[in-house]
Amino acid sequence: MKTIAILSQKGGAGKTTVALHLAVAAVQDNLNTLVVDLDPQASAAKWGDRRQAELPVVVSSHASRLAAVLDNARANDGQLAILDTAPHSDSIAVQAARAADLILVPCRPAILDLEAIASTLDLVRAVGKPALALLNAIAPVGTEADEAAEAITGLDAEVCPVRLVSRVAFSRALITGLTAQEFEPDGKAAREIHSLHMFICERVHMFNTTPGADHDQQVRKRA
Image (cartoon, rainbow, N blue to C red; front, side, top):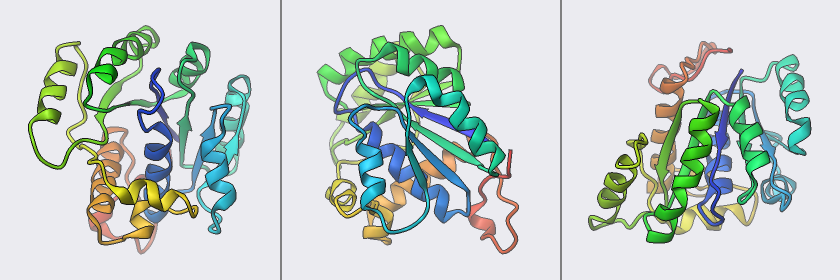
């Protein structure tokens, strides 16, 4: 089983939105997927309560129970776990980072976010796990995202080549327990999430061997 941690020490970076959209993308790719909500606000868990579909499974957990939750997921043939973390909590972030095969650090291309990302990157380096900064909620036009990517690269961090544009579908879909790719399957937001999902799967070496799976949407072999 592979584990992806979504970390940011700044609130409002879009951690939960990214986590839930990636989880549904994985489910659509026939992956047995778990979302672990480590944030006391439990936004991901509340989304799960609103959702009618059985997958992905969403559980709310204290960070001290994370290892047990992941062990249980493996025992039940889990293939992917996505960890949604809390802002302003080093202890939660560290435990999630230690459990992860890959860390995503969402960052909006705004000065306050760029200033705040340094502390998250320091935490990630201390843990020693591979990490990518993910530019999120960028403008559909302009050079703001390119400038933000350059600034993050200057912090000696790797920037994910896939970027998420600020789109209404991302937030509107969550209201009813859906995600953008379910709300607007042919929309731009859905395509962006699919691209991000495929990139991550390649990065953590998940290749789907499920019979009947679309060869062009290869995802992930059971780890």
